[in-house]
Length: 89
Image 1 (tube, rainbow, N blue to C red):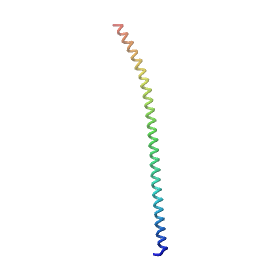
Image 2 (image 1 turned 180 degrees about the vertical axis):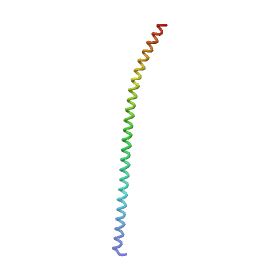
Image 3 (image 1 turned 180 degrees about the horizontal axis):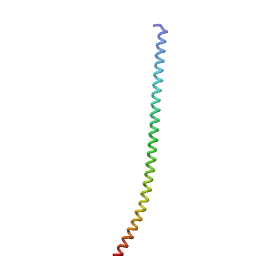
């Protein structure tokens, strides 16, 4: 083989290596971008889930406060009813 043939072989190997490197880097970066997007979507879904859980918890707290008020009213009326029944006996 002549000197010119070796130059062509080395050049071809260099171009092949460059193409393989570029393709590999492109694939890796695309995969990282997709993983980052998927993680962002999951985080957004978790935020929505947390927001709905907080709203449900606040609603439950309001309902419990209302029930506590009603229960206290019923205890007061029951106490007065017991006094009336004792007075009647």
